[in-house]
Length: 126
Image 1 (spheres, one colour):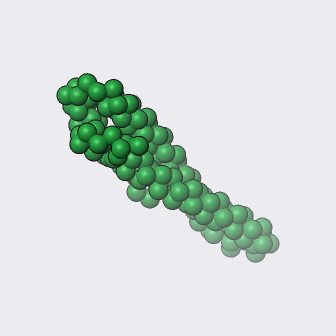
Image 2 (cartoon, helix red, strand yellow):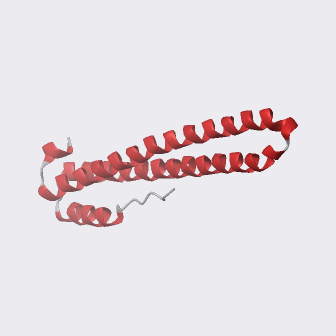
């Protein structure tokens, strides 16, 4: 699984510059909104990474179980465990996909905030 990268450092610099250039109250609110969205994006990325890792761990467990299949008397129990781990892996991957989409939406929201501040378009922030 690939690590999710949050390219918000450049946006934060631009936003700080915009805040210093403009003393309007709404720009400060936009900056605070962008900062909060960045925090949410970071938390969401962290959770997405966690579930991605959990999915890989759950996949490794059935691989270990596969090695044990040579024991005929335990084969049914091993098959049941392998299916359970496979289902857990799928669950984590599903959560990972949802959280990754959340990160994307937070990044888009941050970008819109920055664009709003830089272009002085208050309506865009709303």
